[in-house]
Amino acid sequence: MSTTNTRKEWKLTELAEAAGVSPRTVRYYVQRGLLPAPPFKGPDTVYGEEHLVRLKAIRVLQARFLPLDAIQVELLRLSPDELKALSEADPTQVPPSVAAPAAEQAEPAPASPSPAGPVKAEAPAPSSAGVTSWQRWELALGLELHLADTADAKTRALAERVRALIQESQER
Image (cartoon, rainbow, N blue to C red):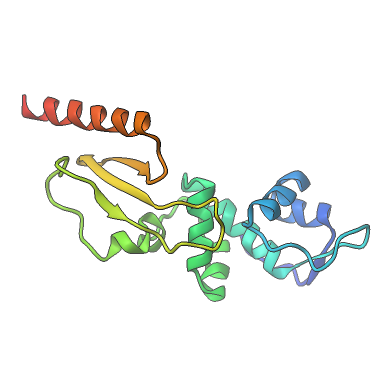
C-alpha cells in the first residue's frame, strides 16, 4: 500500500479508485468526520494527499477489525507522520500502538482474567458528539466485552449477565 503516486489532487472517483473504496464511501467518511471536507464543493471539487493517506489508513485499520468509532479516535491520536506510516503498513500486522488504545497500553494486562470489575479505557474525546467512552471488561484470557457509557439499563444488565455466566463457568 504505498503512495508512490506523485499526484497532489484527485477528483472524487480518482481518489476512491486510488484508495480502493467507492465514491459513496468517501462521501460517507467526510460526513462521519473520518475525512476532512474538501476545500470546496461542486463539479470542480478536488481532494488532496491528506485525503488519500487517511483513506488508506482507514482501510488498514478496518483490516484489523476496528469499528469506525475506534478508527476515528485512532486517526485523531496519530501525528501526520504516523498516519502516513500507517497508510503504507501491511494490514495483517498489528503494531502495539494500534492493537490497544493508548489508555490501555499504560497498564499491562493482568496475567489472570479479572471478571470482578470493569477496566476503564477512555480514548481521547474528540469534538464530535457521536463518540462516547467505553468500559472494557476482561472476561477471560483473550475475551473482552466493551460497553459504551451511553448504553441503556437493559444493555448494561445483559452485559452483567454475560460477565456473571463466564465467571460462573470459570469457577467450575
